[in-house]
Every structure is written in structure tokens, then in C-alpha cells.
Amino acid sequence: MSLRSANIERIDGGLFDVLVVGAGINGAVSAAALAGRGASVALIDRGDFGGFVSQESSNLVWGGFKYLENYELPLVFGLCRSRNRLMKAYPDNIREIGFLAALDHGSPYAPWFAGLGATAYWGIGLFGTKRPHLYDADDVKEQEPAIDTTDVRGAIEYRDAFLVDNDSRFVFSFVRSALEAGASVANYVELVSAERIGDRWVCRLRDTDTGREVTTAARVVVNAAGPFVDEINESWDLRTEHRIVYSKGIHLVVPRLTTTTHDRVLAFFDDTQRLFYVIPMGRRSVIGTTDTRVDSPYTEVTDEDREFLLEQINKRLDLAQPLTADDVIAERCGVRPLVVSRGAGDQDQADWTSLSRKHEIERDDHQRVVTVLGGKLTDCLNVGEEVAEEVVRLGIPLEKDLGNWYGEPAAQTRAEFYRQARLMRLDALRTKPDTEPLTDRLWRRYGRRAFDLLEAIRADPSMGEDVMGSADYLRAELYTAAQHEMVVTLDDFMRRRSKIDLVVRDEDIEGSEGLREVARILFGDDADRRLAEYLDARHRERHTVADEDRTSA
Image (cartoon, rainbow, N blue to C red; front, side):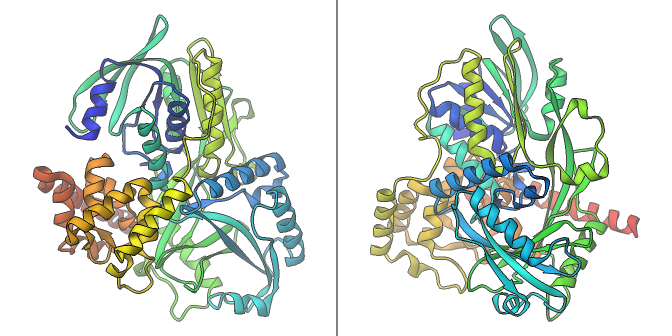
């Protein structure tokens, strides 16, 4: 029986302290915090773990420098504290990085004034990063030759942090933590109905992959459905003081634009006076993001979106050839669930662009529901702790929070892994330029499970080979994903457990001789069906985009 099937069996007919609905970052961290403090927890999502909003982030862990503009000092302080905690708890997954903000004559702030703001930001962040630095125009060109400094007055470099791997994999680390603490978790399980009967919620669930229906019960429900929280609460006649509105943001993944000697984010004000960024992602750069008000959580990149970002970056970088749509390797598009008060009415455009990524957590004592609204990756530890406290107030006793539900393994465990990897010359297996050492990558992605990968490679050297040459993924990693990471569709692996879909061109993926082996390892006898579903979905998506582009033209 697969890990996922075993978890669904435990959920079926069970009675849990808490059912968490939604396995994006808010749901995953809530499940980990609750299970880590002794609660019996079930976690479900109608899609994949981290498979909607949480897979479309900028991969940045930041305190919200731009929120100083609206004097949201308490929010910035809380986000910076959370950022500092995450950097300390995940030293291999979350690393400090410089943000070089180039300021031209059209920027809303002079370099000296931005420097004051960066210094204040550093202080509000309790000096948890390296200090900011002010550059004149000549220094900017020396720091980053890719910037066109023709109209640049100067620049400020401040510090924040970024996820080395993709956002969905970080979400999955909390899912894994919840599992290890005893939670029952399952992706592709939707909530069909829920009814409060006596002292519990009785919930009918459906496995969307097989169609099987099961029933479970829970004393408390945590609604962590991201952009869908209002929809779920309305189905229960539950009204919160806050609601969600949507802002669409897109990112374009292109070949690396900046120097590879060290990672640094470039920041610019676009023609609408909104910050956008060039973010390093290994051998790629990510350009974004935009901010467009939308009425639906279901979004897509339009011709207009794409052209806007390409125009903005071409104006500000000194490139041998301007970027075009042909240079785009992958696109990311999602909504930010932004929190507003129900009494605030509609937001006008001025208010719209100033809305922050704060979160609100509300408790309904009568129906025994905790609702998580808004939030972002940076704030996840705060969300987990606050949800746990609300659950306690609903009568579910929890053990003392020892902080053991998050973070990487101990430094001694890491040192032992690196010792064993060095003895077996693990890094000698990789000869590709501009790729990080295998030791670093395997430890960061798998933690203690990385020891099993070493053992597999020792027993069979073919386990240390790349299955898809351009994707940098070992055969041993695929077997680990198949056994331990609840991969249901090929897209789960290609887009969320890994970031292959984000950094490898479509034609290289679909033309890879290793793609069929990837499917075979992950799905066994079901490989042909899963591979066909994956390729059909990609084909439909490209045709849909092409049809829309022709229509807009």
C-alpha cells in the first residue's frame, strides 16, 4: 500500500482533534504545529500540496521593505522577526541575499532617502542581516554590469532572504513534519460536505484521483483554503470580520541575466512606480511581479502581462539582445489573497496597490472553526503558532511548544552526512559547470532522508546518475519521491517536488529520453497513463494560450 493510500485509510472513519482543510503554506504549517504539540490531525487538499497560490510565489523570504511606505511598522517588525527565525531554522534552505535597488530619475525616491529607509528597515529587523549599503551610479555598474546605468542616480543594497529551492517544496517540508509527528495527510482529497453534529464535524470526503468517498470526523476544523476560505465559510453559514480579495501577479523565467559570481536580487521601479525584481534561480532568472486586481482566483498570463514585464526589464538592463517572448522558459501566475475588512466596502485603486500581505486568524466559538485569511511564506511560523493558540481556546489541549515541528536537522547530523558524502566522493559524480555540489543539494532537499540516498548510491552506482540530463535529478531521488512524497500526477513531481518545469524548456522536457523512465519509477504499471495525462495537459495549455493570444491580437 502506498503512503498516500495508507493515510486515506487512517482518515476514513477516524475522529481527529483537528481537520485542516487546505495544504498550502497556511494549512501545512498549521498541521505541523498542531501535530508537533500532540494533537491528532488530518490534513487534506483537493489538489496537490502547495499546488495553488503557494507554488506561484517569488521564492523570497522578506520583511516587507515596501510596507514602510505606508508606515506599517508592526507588520514589518513581525515579518522581519519571522524571516530571522526562518533563516536560523533553515540555514541550508533559506539564505540571506542582497537586494540591489537601482534608482533612476523616474523613481519616487532619491538614493539618499532610500538609504535612510534601508537603514530603518535594518534596525526594525533587529539587525538580523548584513547592513545596507549606498552606491553611486558608477558603483552600480561595477556591482552589476547587467544594469543600464544611463539614467541611474544611484542604488541602495539592503538584505533579505530567499528560498534556494522552490516554494512548493518548502511547503512540503511542513507536510512531512506533520506526517512525522503522527498527522494523517492526503493530497487530492476534497471536502464534499461537512455538518456539525453534537460535539464534532462529520465530513464527507472524496479522493479526486480514484473517486472513492470516505467519511471522517473532527472536533475542530481549520479553514486554510487560501483564496477559497470565504467560499467554504459561506457554505457553513459562517461569517468572518474579514474577507479575501485577489491580486494577480506573474513571473517570467528566462536565462540567467545577472552575474553568477554571487546571487543578488535586482530591484527596479516600473513605469507605474511599483517595484519589480530580477531574482536568481540557479542558471535562470525570474522577472516579476505584476499587481493586477482580479475577481477570480483562477488566473493566467496574458499577452499584455508578458509584454509589460519584458518591456520594463529591457528598459533597465544593458543586454546584448532585448528579451522577447521566445526567451521565456516558463511562466508563473497566481493570486495574492489579500485581507480586507468586511466593513471597508470596495477598495479604490489607490488603496488597492497599497494592500499588504498581512494575515488574520479568526475563531468561531459556536461552530468551532478557525479561519486563516491572507498571509505569505515569510509569516508561516507565526501562522502556525497563532492557529495552535486558537485551537487551544476551542478546548483542544496541546503540549508545550518545543519548536520541534519546524527546522532542519541538528548541525551534528548535517556534519555526519557531509562526512559520509565526502568519503564516498559524492560530489565527483557531478561534472556539469554552474551546478551546486550534490552534497549540498541532497542535504537541503531531504535532510535525514539524504542518508538513504547515499546508501542507495553505494549499493547501486546507477542510482547516482541523472535521469534527465538537463534537469539534474538523480535516479535515487526519483525512487525516494515515489516512496515518500505522495506523487499522484507527473506534474506533482515536475512542478512541485522539483522545479524541473520551471527551469527546463518545454521541448527539452518533452523530448527527453529520460521522461518515460521518470514516469516508470514514479508510477510503475500506471506510467503510460500518467505520462499521457501530463503531456496532454501541457499540449492543451499551450493551445489555450495560443488561441487567447490570437484573439487578443
